[in-house]
Image (cartoon, rainbow, N blue to C red; front, side, top):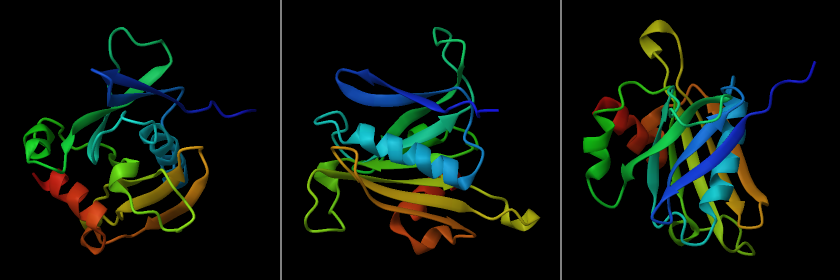
Length: 173
């Protein structure tokens, strides 16, 4: 039996990435969430599509006009250049995941021979008091889709990484 694939469809407003529709099924593991992050980072590589580092909250609701196989979406809740994400984050509740995407203009490639690299982080919040650890994934990809770095971790301390620290702060807001 073949697993149902996870589909991602970007949606925009005024030529800028406003969110990504998730279809087929939800990612079921840290690895699948990180693979979803890689695809999202590739979307962030599109020139001018993501003007600055942007935070996306995952919501388990689908738009009314979405295809029948839509399961939810990643919705832009703000950027880290100003404080708009704190206000937007208050309306998010407790999302199953938060994603931070950095466009090529805000990413310093980890390899000097790479250009037009975008990067991102996904935080899967846990409940440490109940023994459920925080999980995260990080990815960096070139505009042509080449994955430069990919890392997953279970049992992270969100304050140990700048991206997860910002995402954890949004959860706490």
